[in-house]
Length: 216
Length: 117
Image 1 (cartoon, each protein chain N blue to C red):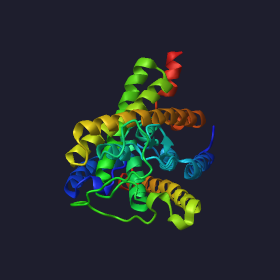
Image 2 (cartoon, each protein chain N blue to C red):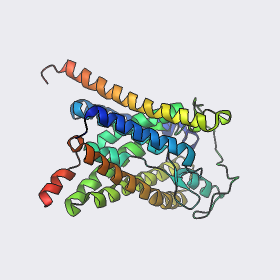
Image 3 (tube, chains in turn green, yellow):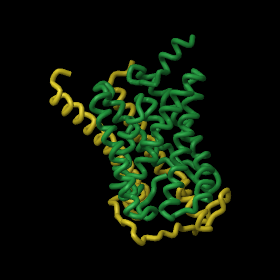
Image 4 (spheres, helix red, strand yellow):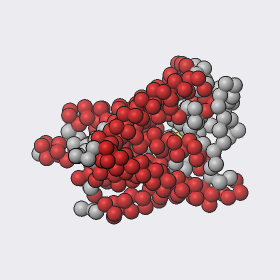
């Protein structure tokens, strides 16, 4: 879903950058005020893991491949959508500047799609679903799937505004491909939440532990 | 319970293993956005395979261009998979360090401005 420079005119990229910077500022405030020092290792390990997982493109049929984005994972594990903005912004900077994965002028749009929309959709749908189902794997899978699909649809709209894709065709194709890629997002997110809560439940803010106890 | 040091080392090793496996096993098919670009440009049907000669046409008019030092997570054709490994290992460790450094810096800066907390 990494938009390259060639897909958005510079002036539109600048608008997305300005919007993204507002959320980046809020994410920095989150890091200063909300992120506890004990969680620093988790935040950094999550960034390394998300970077590595993003390089692992898996086939999803239809001549297409996809990988974990990680917005839902970061937000759910660290208990705030701004954690996703914080981590994804830095991962996207490394990817764009060093590896040409995602553009420079389009980085703002990529931060909005994967960090902001992915983080918020993933976090709040997980919270809502946990309240209803009390089931981490089900809630995590659906939340992560939505956190892949909805940013992709937002990306299709941005591509339409940029004059790169026609609206309907772009929405349909982006929707179909990311509905498939979202399955990867769901499985990997649930597996990672399970793994991290197993070894360091104290670092995790998902409410999974509390809910398990309360639901017994 | 796993201590911080073990957690970090285990996490980094898992991340590096994923990255190393990715260099050899990652699919070469276009991602969802690239596939959509090929669909709207009439080079691919939505559910069909991607033709091997399919190439995204880019309108660079009014667009920014940038050459990254390690494009496509490689160090160029001549380096082959070794270049890919170096790029992924470097990127994974760099992502870890930059996030740890910034997060730590923010906490330290936050503390010095708010000595009572």
